[in-house]
Length: 456
Image (cartoon, rainbow, N blue to C red):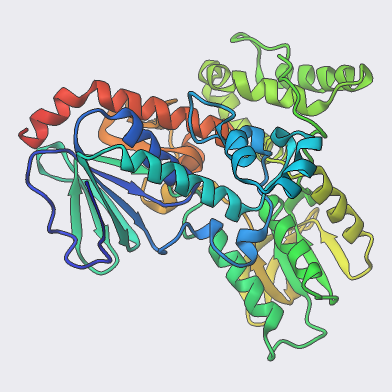
């Protein structure tokens, strides 16, 4: 067993012992969990490369980004598909008695931990899985992947930003929102503007987005002492929704393979209203929809799918990707601050000392002065642009396989949010974990084919 840090020091020098060469692009939560799953599930020896622009998972690093709370509670954050409460057990074993006793009163499964804590958990589980494999090597590569293309022998070639190339038998794209919509750029911009001596005191900060990242950065700015004007630029005037106060079981909504999109939406509204009247939550109904969504989507005709992407995708995401109730309360309280303004507008470009926006109901673009912190979570570019844009001929399966014109692209898996517009259902972390383990288990079943390609 060996572990080496290959920081673009001749990455083309790869072992030639016949073992499969596997790449994971992205070292965030999905990438780390993919590595854990492969180490636990792939029984034959292999060589693993973990490739990311940064040396540490970008959205789970040190500093303010690491101190921000996770957007999902601990009971939904296990990295082990066969042990759904593994993260809760890890918290119980590792927290000090003082803090642990406070958390235990609320139930460990209901707490929202800082991202740095979750990073430590993933690092610990990765270390344990790696230590159990004496037949596997792991290397990290600090580089940006600029292109993905087929190579000889059924392999895949990754081009790096320094001009070098690496060929692999299997590639797992786990880039999250990637460089274009990544966490690190948003947090870095927020910190630079927060402490910049050149920023004028009366220049508003423009925080664009409607998801958990926007809420976390806005609250961080206020907690750090910024009392100036902040404008939230949110298309549709949407804000992140809260989780229910405690974990709730999904409630199966009235839908089937024969139910149309419009009829399903009416059922969802009615089911949500009835469940709230009965003392339940609308969140349980939405979670029930997410459980059924993959099968439902496959039964929808093409025109209904297009309507979903045009009109309902953003609303579905907002209702599914939620924030902690206490953070939601703080967000609403800050909106009562005259210095915070929610603007229903779409950002269409940047200009000197401002952004170009189009407000709701207006056909004309206008310049809004201020300094932009872009927290938008765009899903339109699959795997940070490494894959073609969405089309009827391409989609991502439940195990991450990329299907093009009805045929799986050999050796390629697209996991979690990296699927972008190629997969419609919401990818919460537990869903992504299940997808990752399906991919790892399927890869183990194909180990004979891998052996033939690598010459083992």
